[in-house]
Length: 300
Image 1 (cartoon, rainbow, N blue to C red):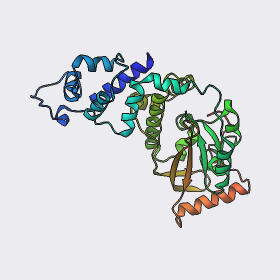
Image 2 (image 1 turned 180 degrees about the vertical axis):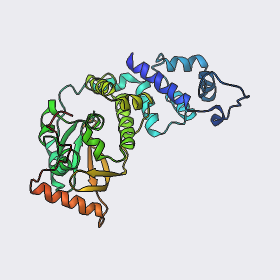
Image 3 (image 1 turned 120 degrees about the vertical axis):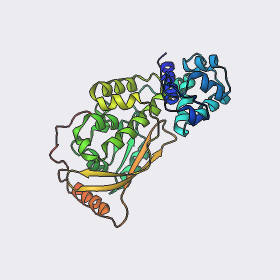
Image 4 (image 1 turned 135 degrees about the vertical axis):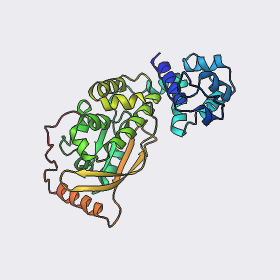
């Protein structure tokens, strides 16, 4: 039932952001009782009955056709990520079937582990389906979490989690000068993941923990933004080597459900490349890579 409630909340949030005039509907002036499109208006534009759309929004139409879902997505102006999320929510049985195959802690294949280690001075890590750090090379550890135990990803109970660190670890507030932008992107990615894995207990625990521990997370989660981790240049304010602009590239591992590799690079010849090279030199000499926010290693 939770996934059906999620579907309804998602559709209502997308109806609310559309004005009637955006959809080509007359407004006739006056004050509307609800923000955005009414159910009846959306149903009319999508070419379905109001009753059918109401049942869809209430999770009572699990066999909605591709044509209906595509029509609803078109009217709501959903992007590719939001459209995929709609399909995941409208057809939870298919997503749940995929989820049942993964009850044990996630593992990183040896070939993938060797790959990120071979990157040398380039930071690289492997994220699991729920944003746990499953493996990182020394440079990724030094860049993102030098204050944590480098061996933590090898212990399933202690694995750092990208979302947990971002919202609950003060070190990450200092690391990301554009923290709000990073937070929005992470929550949108987590929302997309939740649609693909409805009812996963590990994910439910993580979302509950973040909702209780971070008002910012709770506000962003309630907005129902959806999107993949984007490839974008971000600024990092490292406590030892200073400010760097790095490009993060994300690669999906097709043989490992939900796992992704993140690789961080700087523009050749830039000051950021020089700072990254300095970080590599310090990492190689085992120089402590924590600043004033150094804390005892903990599970994040």
